[in-house]
Amino acid sequence: MSTRFLADTAVLTGRSLRHVTRSPDTIVTTTIMPIAFMLLFVYVFGGSIRTGSDAYVDYLLPGILIITVASGISYTAFRLFTDLSSGIFERFQSMPIARSAVLWAHVLTSVVACLVSLAVVVLVALLMGFRSGAGPLAWLAVVGILVLFTVALTWIAVIVGLSAKSVDGVSAFSYPLILLPFVSSAFVLTAAMPGPVRAFAENQPVTSIVDTIRRLFGQQPAGTDIWVALAWCAGILVVAYVLALAAYRRRTV
Amino acid sequence: MTAAAPAIAVRGLRKSFGDVDVLHGVDFEVEPGRVFALLGSNGAGKTTVVRILATLLRPDSGTATVDGFDVVDRAADVRESISLTGQFAAVDEILTGRENLVLVARLRHVTDPAGVAADLLARFDLTDAADRRASTYSGGMRRRLDIAMSLVGDPRVIVLDEPTTGLDPQARLEVWRTVREVAAGGTTVVLTTQYLDEAEQLADRIAILHRGRIIVDGTLAELRRLLPPATVEYVERQPTLEEIFLAVVGDARAEGEASR
Image (cartoon, rainbow over the protein chains, first blue to last red):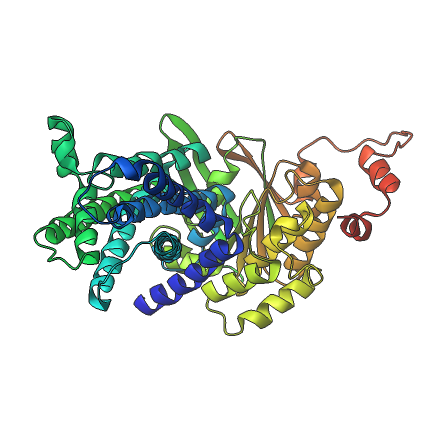
């Protein structure tokens, strides 16, 4: 059963990856907004923002990476929704394949597509002067956290893809996720925010993830932030996964 | 399989969605290798029956077996035996016709996916279009690809849910030809339709599903006997609009496809 699950997941992942490579515009669209934010904040607002870092782009990049993931996963919801409305999902369900393979294929595709988008954004950041002396281990840790975060958000996208009634609903859900970094330490120091906003900003998941990545890039000890960040990712992952499976059962026998 | 064992046996099938009773006790049997038509108007419950047979939906009560396997208790075995072609051509538009077939062949774990795909492409006149994306196919070609995908791995039963709804007359004739070929190969075919002539053209046995019940079940000859015997009348026979249409646009399949 489990070898069948792996084989079926591999076949279906190959299929949805082909969807990504055949419409490279999805990668372009997912990277355009984060890159635009990065240009806007570095070259327009950045001069007036005091963060204590030498280069604002160094301070900004971790938050931009979070936005990249948030905009990338909306395509996962879109691809799943399209499968459901086109009937191919039912075709898979009526075939003798491991049932959860259909979902896992979308999740794996989402991770691969997001990693490609993240690489594009980091490349643009390097062109804009982003520099990090982080060693391979620190980079690996950054990639690991971003992958975990992507998987967690992808399961939210799966819930949306499975339960949305229209394409508009599918694309709208990622806006709050994209805006969340603005009320965090991603763009400015939280210390300057008024009390309640600051309390929210300092205790929402984006801040701990962004701070962790920033410290890894800056070769500083990650401290407790990394554990808070991992706990947030794991918590979102578990809750979203359970809800996604419940949504999946509602759509199937 | 012995001659007595039906390919499909449905008994006392009931299903409701909330307050809406869709099926109120449906019974029918399909003999292996036959074409069985489930005829009914929109909302009669045809698709619900089909979805239960394809293990996509659980019945509230009653039983259904496919190839001897219960659709609830032995769903995995049923999925090996049955292949569903849903109401909307469920092909992957971004993949080519060949890739669609290879995908299904891999998922059905057949030994030579590429070979199976090539055979089916040839059999369904899709070889020329094999390496074009399915989104460029005409309605009839897409349906043929859809049915070809259902035949991968030689399932013993194929279910076609309204295979010609929304197709133009030429495409409809293409699909009819395809269904006849599939049936000639010994596969049991269950098709649902709201078109009387379709059932008359294709089916060995016809059941009329009306408001969640089978109200008539028999061969075409048996169904004809339900009405008073035919009287002989002389009527000047006018061509049907379909005949006119097909004559005016030229015969159909070859040309219709070339122009797409």
